[in-house]
Amino acid sequence: ASRLKINRRKSELFYMGQTQGKALRLASLIACKVGSFPTKYLDLPLSVKTPSKNDWKGLIQKLQSKIDGWQTKLLSRGGRLILVNAVLTNLPLYYLFVFKAPRWVTKRIESLRRDFFWNSGNNTAGRTQHPRCRHDEPSLTNKVGVKTLYDALAAADPDHS
Image (tube, rainbow, N blue to C red):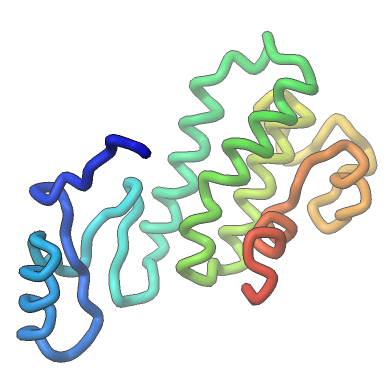
């Protein structure tokens, strides 16, 4: 058995119902505080409203800062493949499960992932070194092992639309 324990001082209950008294009763039952929206979870803003353009830009900047921190010139194509699938796919997945992203967001994330894989993170005016690499061509990405965001969402939750 694990010796991990819940830190009740850091835990909060976020209640989506209309009855505030019920939130207080539930929080006292599990010995934590009642949280309120908007808040941040995993450094991403959560709200009862649809994310703003700035919220989406924050996610994109977070991905870009990850890429900027990696010494991509020293990575093999296999190393870049692992980072694309493990980090640049999984980092936005939580947010994409919760909110339906506008098309420009998914296109930009796919562009960052594609440029990192093919061009070592250098966006050369939107052109990739691989002449057949297009974001709407899943057969090519499957051939080299790069998961698309859509494929990752579908694999994690087949009912997600």
